[in-house]
Length: 269
Image (tube, rainbow, N blue to C red; front, side):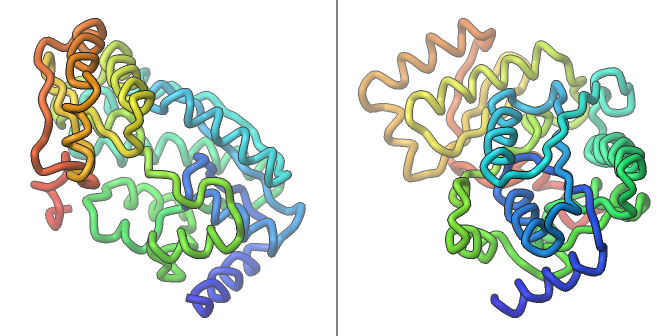
């Protein structure tokens, strides 16, 4: 693991200066921390504010950037103005990444940086990730993946570095909760964000509300499922979700799993 960390530092050092695509998640935070240790002031972190990202994630990114002492720019990108994204084909992630990183390359050039780096890790190669093709086309570097660092190793190293979010659950864009082929709307994204925020307030740490029109399919870890039926949580969830706009509220008995909407597409990219 230490050899991988040294490899990562070497990869970053070769850039001489970078713009880091920074979401506030553990991967991009770890990448940013290492970049700062290697390049010092020749690093800028840029966070994207979009309808597809939960507001709390943007605030979390800003907070951690302040702790790390790095310049953090917030740029607005309106994904819902892009019809190719909105129709929600299996290439949704491709169009999303293409839009974001095209903007980041322009910004990097303004600051005199030749390289933009992002936080995909080695585990991400096992999932259906059409967005990786966009990164490759644009020449975006993924140092964690290149150094073959996986999520568990990143968490261990982040804990050693005392990063405040070393154990933070992943929180990908809200569009990942909507089945492919169903149009992405602001209203649907707000429903999902509100529903997941409510579950988090009830004490669940890792949640996904997969939105199937008027059906909410709740994914939480299997060991947490029984908690739903304790302390009137089930009744509270039903009441709140119906206020949000769902008619039927279900629990996925397989529990939370990363990229469940992609399961039928893995290996077909």
